[in-house]
Image 1 (cartoon, helix red, strand yellow):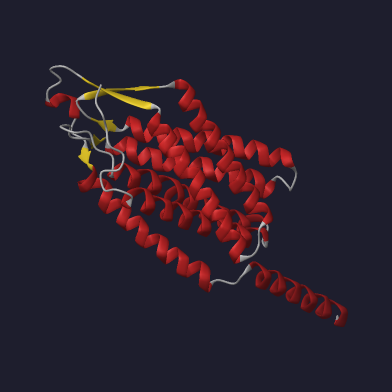
Image 2: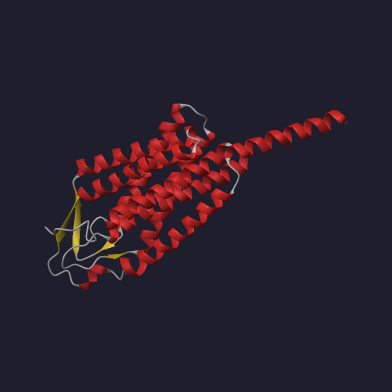
Length: 264
């Protein structure tokens, strides 16, 4: 059995991954506060933006920043590009499903629980799909009870995030929820990593690498690009009207329309 190192750069990768997870969750939750002030297509657009923010920055980027610190002595780790990209799309899709369920399903606990379970299972699946994208001269095996624990953590974190999306309005309360969600996502990731054991393959040869891309050549530029987009999204959200301003404008327009109708 090989002995991987999850912290090749010390606390740099887990700390940076946690910060990006918090940022993605914070941006996504701020998008949902605006979504609640709208209805119809406008609400759907804000929920879709929230899904991209949480799914890509909050979940996917956190996972692969952490994977930048994952090394196996004497082994070269590469990543299958299509599977890696597909794992990102999966994260966005399942987070979007959960947000749309709670965003259009009302404030009851049933939509929250259904959305939380779907999102948690999807986010956990994204993690293991990301692991399946690894190409190296070794085989991976998983401890099923620990895998089950990572799934539970993922479902709890997702449910808490959806609850926050429905209930929280203020910036500071949203920031606190984002920090808690960052703990959940990071906990799910490292629990999943603890479930995995790696075994060397005798006479594997270079064919086991299957032409994947290295983390430095593929993941690092992609993560940097997504991070820049996240900060651009931050500026967009900060400059956009708040949920309270949106509701006030809607009420003002409604009063204006009523006044015009009364004059006619």
